[in-house]
Image 1 (spheres, rainbow, N blue to C red):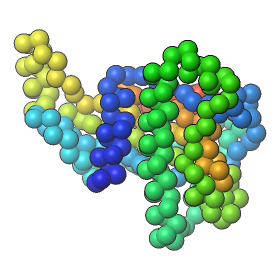
Image 2 (image 1 turned 180 degrees about the horizontal axis):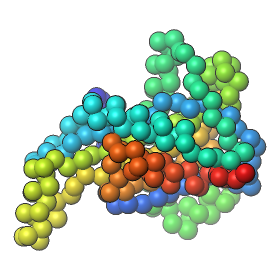
Image 3 (image 1 turned 90 degrees about the vertical axis):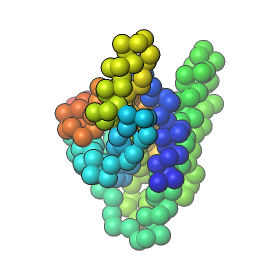
Image 4 (image 1 turned 180 degrees about the vertical axis):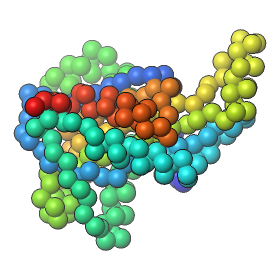
Length: 235
């Protein structure tokens, strides 16, 4: 629960309005090498916002959304530059290490996106200069040794749905000229080098109209994320 709260605090403010952003490491700017990526189970949570604004995670909704996101990832056509491979069975210790790095990815993703919003022209120049360097550390190198893959695809998604009472409060607020925020959804995906932990690619997308409990909405959100990957959809 602490991990969920951390991700919400870090990333929910970034998803207040529909927006997209892509980060691309210098090594991928001109197509880059072919990568084999472990497809890590996405970290997905769906919550309900009560009339009073209390956010509560709903396990059944979260399970359904995780299933939808996982299926959407398998449907994405990334062309010849990126191939997915399944994550093998892990020991408890290995699984714990992986979960810690997914949580760390949430923090790094937040920093990358915040910099993109605040950096302006200076941020753009820094990107072109190749001076940016984001990493989750080398703690996942054991996965490269175990599988032969060189990267991992990490993804975090959050969806907050308004309850019936919350929707009524929103309507009432609108009558009196008071804006009451409703639910929103966002997802951030990133490709991480397993040995160095370096972030090679990241894409962030949010939409107040997406519902991760619905396969069609989920497919649309995930497809939007991966459009920015170099060579995506190429034959």
